[in-house]
Image (tube, rainbow, N blue to C red; front, side):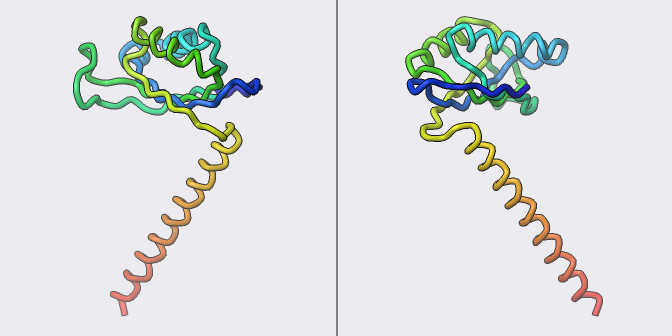
Length: 142
């Protein structure tokens, strides 16, 4: 579900966390993603990446829904259209909630680099924790 996009100087990169209704997404995932894409692209947004994150229970019901499928997206858009995207999402029935933040000065390649560094750090921490656990277990055996 990854698409690379070219952007003009007026375009900015945004990150969005999008909550969609879980039941329709379970039965027709592609239809749910198409509805999200339509909401954004009809206003001129260009997706760099749109990925399924996970389904979670909500802390409180939203429009009668107690769970939602979370999508994580990166897109480019003119700053003037973000408010129109948010309005279209509120008026439509595909998106329960969304959070859009600007990622100034960062393009998708920098975001991917951040992800890989975070994954490498997490892997190194897991290896260190396993080694510490193994050495402490070995000290009990002596």
